[in-house]
Length: 126
Image (spheres, rainbow, N blue to C red):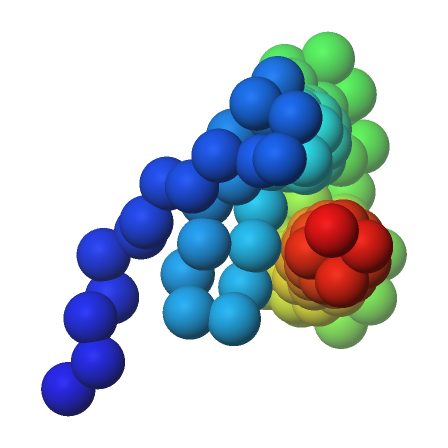
């Protein structure tokens, strides 16, 4: 089994620190950039989830037609939303979140590839 512990190596200039995981190389700055974007993405989707989830009981408090007026086959808008549309909303939100998170991961991999290519050029140039 290969060693999976990260190895810290210094650059030629000594200004940056690279973390190498096998063939994969990251800098502290590139990881921080992607993690900031991930936190922003997570907070945004969390806020949307919280707002929509809170809107369901809030609509029941302030809008009687939401829970007391049948709109189709005796079902109220509240029941139809919670029984069907809320689950569709959650699945769509999960799918879009995972696609955007995958794009962030690809961005980190592209940065790592660029760092590795830069290192290889510096080593060949010496």
